Image (tube, rainbow, N blue to C red; front, side):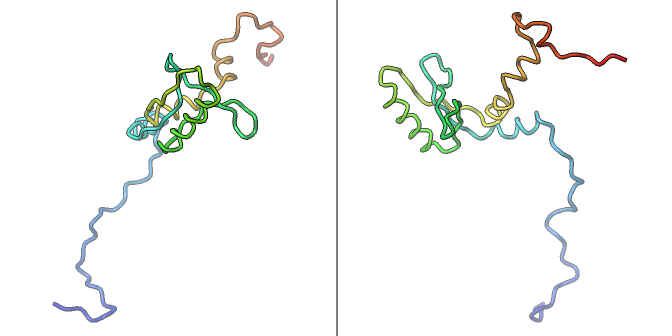
Length: 127
């Protein structure tokens, strides 16, 4: 039956069910979902990422979501290092995210350097 303009049928059912209550994803669930998306990095012969100097002068090993941007970065690094064999490597985005969570300070806290002195170690509160 035809409806008058501006009228809505009362017996129309929604195509989607009532939403499930929000449950935050764990870090591993996020990583697993992101792993379906490739990202790219510039690597050397040993497949280790090649650091680049950012605009702020800090060395970084960037991942690129855009393959064209990765190819431009590769070309730039090849011009700067003509004797070094470089190529692009694909990495799952979840893995790249997990790698970006790592930091030298976190690694040092997890396993202190053998050469660190007792003064450098974290101190526990007494009492």
